[in-house]
Image (cartoon, rainbow, N blue to C red; front, side):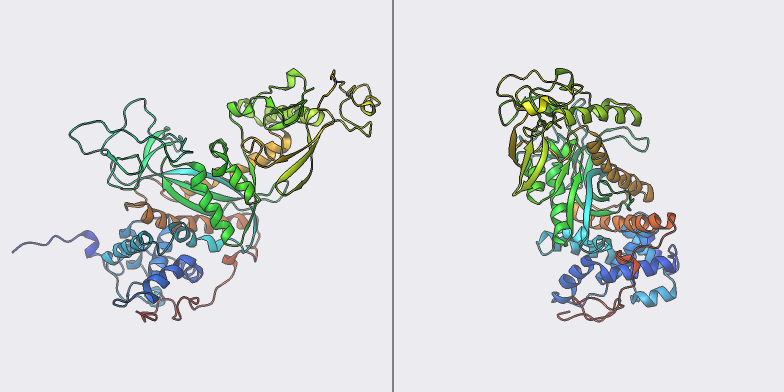
Length: 539
């Protein structure tokens, strides 16, 4: 007679798992009542289900997974099942689930994947619906955007050739040349339909390049890019804000940065929020305009960004007698020594940044075109010299009024037809990848752009608050991975919001949903109490 070898998870019983605090259970229970993703899955798995009534409901899975994430344990199916085994009798009664088997947890994830693949639920909506209710309703937001690496659980079957970048990020055109596979006996790597290699058993993981962090050197990896939009302090605001994650998406590593972030922006706007501006690094404004800067301006959002060396080149202006330098319009009378100032990235400390910013301020204040009115996606600009007054910052021989100004002001050597006192109206489509609301390099730009450090802080807190390393989720495929990471972001946001105000000895403002206790019944998607075993209409 064959001996059946039991898995360790099969021998676990109620009382064997790690305990969950009553506070965490209350947080998880209340959160599930407000979760949009739970409502979506209730609709698909309960109301639209025509099979046998489901015993393990979405609300059960959500509570157990939220408890696991809040306890900062890896989001494995075994850990989620162990959380159930560690509940107290009172928590079991409140959960409303008399019995659970490990395989029910894995089957639930399989079912979620099937629903997304069938097009019944959008993965971005599902992932964000786990945590987006934590954001105050209809907020006016400044968000900063960036991505962080998330390594696949699958073991690499075929490594890269030495000296070759496996993940070029210039994917502006969909007709990028596909990768080429060397002939050989091994089946790995597998060339997929997207023209990229699959190097692990994870079908959606791709090659990427990551920066160094946590004592790990930079280099190639196989996995995903977790794209984040993080709440950021408004420009010129003196009030600090919690850097919670407003939106997120998961894409194969090496995916186009702009195209990965745009679905997040669309999702945030669809929830009724308003986005005023988005600071982001140079990887985003290096895209063609339709994939970032142009699209944001169409949505009424101001992009804030740094410039690459190639973007800082001098180019002729839109009217005679003008020149565009660092994305800012100047009169051509701009002295040569002010045309090529050092980049802020070359300065070592804050004092050097401030000193360099003063030089940029001087350049713009004296010779730059100043913004006037804005309407219909067009910006009207005026030259530094006024033809009707003597208060111009510089004196130009072609404008007599300006020559009446103080002689300690710079005097140009303009010939006839200069651009010192011109006016021009520029459409948003004019040099969209280098023009921005504050002139590059100035003190205002420096304060504006460096608000984007909020997303770096969120990345660091996300990794520090959870065991966010390879194997944190032991599932294959983008759908399951993205879904589970939504719970990780929920735990991060909860700690971020609560700790932000606790450190300042303040109560969480009433605008945050976590400051309120929701009703004890589910929303309109189901008419049963949370944890009820009774199926909704249709089984």
